[in-house]
Structures are given as structure tokens and as C-alpha cells.
Length: 235
Image (tube, rainbow, N blue to C red):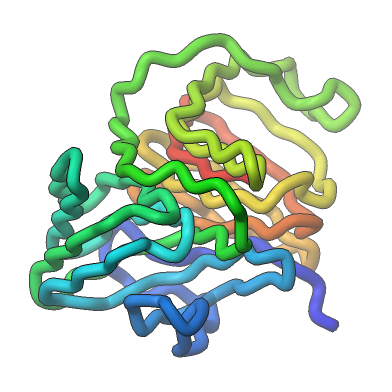
């Protein structure tokens, strides 16, 4: 069995990601043909979708975050309409009655929780970059290779049934040792740049506008020399 590793899903400049994707779907009710980078037995999945046109879904089957990288995607629920341009992101909660209108050749990265849960929280949640943040915990002192950073965050979407948390985080620069990642995490960098060192010693540079997925237990070190602000999806 291959060791889990961080995987780049999409670059801001549109250049191809080196990640291996497999075409497929996330289940019988999945409205999209996807390019899947990761699909865990615990129901967490990540990858990209290339699509255009209009799709209607009576009950969206997953709780899913999308980050638009090309084109534009409009999400319409009974309560609201969100238009997402490149660099913008939103959460579609499971159970949402939804119309999706994508410009031709649109591309978005996704992170979906496909577990079956009894209680749904239908709706759409925008993830705006200028979200007001509050102080949050820094990395554990024993793994830091630099002074402790100042970190802030804000959960914009929480699904209690699955402990899925989605929001905005920022931090001053810091460096930490490699350790197995404690959670599944999608990161979309809104500002700054970070170097992730993988288990084999190779470095993955994630810049502003890039989207990366780090699976649970994937060995990963972090080095940032500038301020970083990101969208996160963790479970």
C-alpha cells in the first residue's frame, strides 16, 4: 500500500499539476464526471472537475467545497445565488436542492465528504478571502524549528455529524518538522507561499492561488518565509 502524500490539485497559472488523477465519480448520485486524486475508505475525496453547462440536483449527495480555477460557476439554491470566479470558493452542504451553471471549460478543485449521515444542513456557504479572523492555536512547540507563529482562523461551515470544518486561516512565517498530518486537509492559498517537504524529501511549493490536498497521516513538513492566508477544509 502506497504511503499517503500531499498532492497538488490545481495551479493558479493553469499549468498542469504533476498529480495522478483517475477519471470516475464519487457514487451513483454524483452529478459530475471527475478527475479524482484521492478517495479514502473513510469517505474523504479530492480532485478536480472540468465541466460546462447547467446541472440540476434535487438533493446534493455530499458536503463539498469547490475552488474555481478557470471559467465561472454559479450555484443557485432556494435561498441564495453564488457566482464564483477564479480564486473564489464555496461549500455545498449535503441535501441542498441546487442548480449549477458553469461556463464552458470551467475547472474547479473539490474536496468532498461522501459519508452517509442522518441529519443534513442544506445550503450554500461562501468562503470570502477578507473574512474576519480570531486568534487560534499555533503548531505544537515540540515540532517547531522556528519561533512560534501568530495564527488566526474562523470556521465558516461546520458539519457536526462528520466533524467537517471549513473556513479561513492565516499565519506569520514559521518552519516545523515533518510529522504525519493529523487530519485530511484541503488548502487553497489566498496569499503567500509555503514549501511542503514530503516523505521522500522532495519539496512541493504551493503559491498564491494554488490548491493542494494533504491526506490524513501523510508525512509533511512546513516552511513559510512570508505571511500565509488560506481556505482550509479539515476533517
